[in-house]
Amino acid sequence: MVLILPCCTFLSNKDFVHRHYGYHGVKRVVIFLQRWPVYQQLPGQDDLGAGFIKKETRFLGPWLPAAKINPRAVDIKDIDDQLIGELLLEVLQKKGYEPFLAEFMPAAEGARTAAEMMAKYQAVNRELDAFLFCFYSPTLFVARPQDAPPEQGQRSYGLEEVMQILGSTSRGVVWAGPRAALVQQKAISHAFVYLSLGLFRALDWQPLWEVADSQVGGKIRPVVQECLPAPTDLDYWADARIIKRLMRENLRCRLRHIIPEAF
Image 1 (cartoon, rainbow, N blue to C red):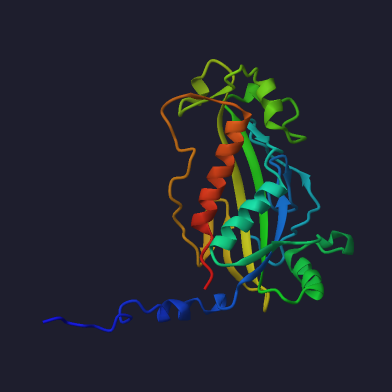
Image 2 (cartoon, rainbow, N blue to C red):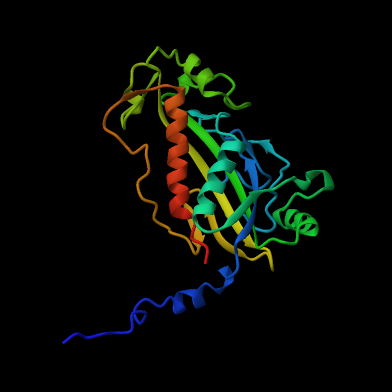
């Protein structure tokens, strides 16, 4: 005897859709990008992981000198708006959204907070479902503070420039393992793109999901699978090209896990 059950009985997502009704119809998303170097901070916020992007967040500054800088941290200018924008567009499209980068940043009109920017942008483009705000901070860490570039607290550096300061050879520099502080030669210990993301529904500017460094909120996957470069017990050689590729692929991997699918 063959028992036939209604095929959709155990596959219905009715409850899931009901719980996340705010996402219904969210397809067309405009993206605002803002670089956040390690040597700068916003008024009242020391770093991009201190809190989620809210409507009152001052997205366009004014920027202030950072009160405290990690002595090993270097802002990397090779990771720029173009690269971050391309990755966000790629991942959002694969998740079912229709994303596009903002054609203008309304700073000249006095818009500073996320709410002011949404109001300005919505006035000229009403065919929007959501606004995505993104702070990003591409940061390389040298293994020892004494090896940091001399102006790491005032400006950004290119990867090739950092390699020269560290005295790279034809093989590049050493990307140190967990005992980076014990490395005798000049080396790096990590290179990472920190992110703060906030998706707001255009209808009422309510946040749908949020990311602030390692914090997450909303309909989002809170556990990110291990993305390269993974921790290693070994030291290995890396040049500027390899470091940029690893930073890019690590970010692409994380975005695939933290950005939820569109309905």
